[in-house]
Length: 459
Image (tube, rainbow, N blue to C red; front, side):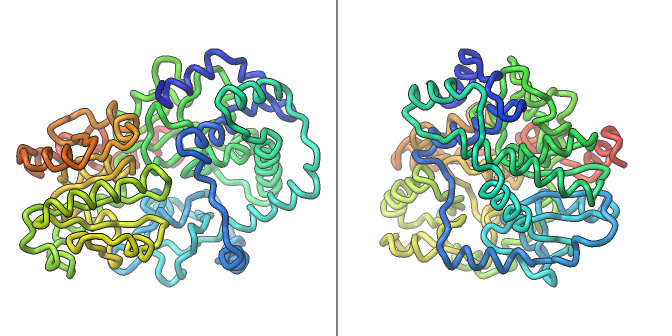
């Protein structure tokens, strides 16, 4: 049973709709942590060093004076959404909205740092950390005891799946989010709130929607039936979920069928991808990486990942690189520092390009690979075919129902499979690859967004 089947099975076979805290349905938030721990052993929750905690404390003052002034729209995003374009760091999910809508306040969670305001395209940005600190204080001082209705159901599920996810701790986080946002809305009454990753801010969503304010999700990554943030099969309180989703492509609507009530097709607006519309087509001619790759028979961009599954791609590609010395790979780390990979005794045809972001590297290389990074959705829009390393069947689980053109996206279960797929030499040309991805990533971003905002009555 894959993760998507597990998620549906639990929703259908257990009375999860009866799990409540302070009278509010709680399962849709808890399930994010519950299934995250099954997707990657131990979950992907991050622990921080003392140095990082001190850095976060200092970062909480980031843009502090920007909190003041007229605010008509709130935007929540993360600093890892930022990409550099012409010397300025833009948020690839949010900045077009920030620049288009009047009196917008952008609230950003640092992962792991904020960029200098002087380097931002849109400058009215504040740190999300003060709100997180308020949540922690509220949890520690006020929410000492929390009563969960239906706790026995959570206990049954923990036992069945051999987990020990604390319902009490997750409930405290949910209630703290809810209370802190209620407090913020005393001072700021926006016309609308835009969010990346709203399933991690469900307490915020509930508080905002109870105030009659629409919440719009900005797609930031892959959305599929195996993603625990986007699959709900019981009639939960609609106030736990955003009103609308600004999606990459028409195919996203296909996720919300067969009883999945997170969104309806009428509330999903395919608009495309802002950043991909900004990448210079000639990026490959303007940097030293193109020179380093010169002469290679094949070049492959590698979107690395930090969890225990994603990291296994290194061993597979090392084997490929050793067998195919005339191929060159460009590793693009995510949060794990480059120096960690450099200690792995990698062959000389595995390179790094720290001066470039992952999209720029993909644009320069011939092909793209990953395990389950969202870049697999975006690479074809840049005219590049995918050969995905299907470790623990995660690539297929994530993308098999989305990236359905097997001329453009292939799955490799081993180094031998990987080599065989690339040696076939039968990928379509760049223009055909781009066209093949229209259902995943529509074109015409600006016009699509304008139309969506009008239909949602945001403008």
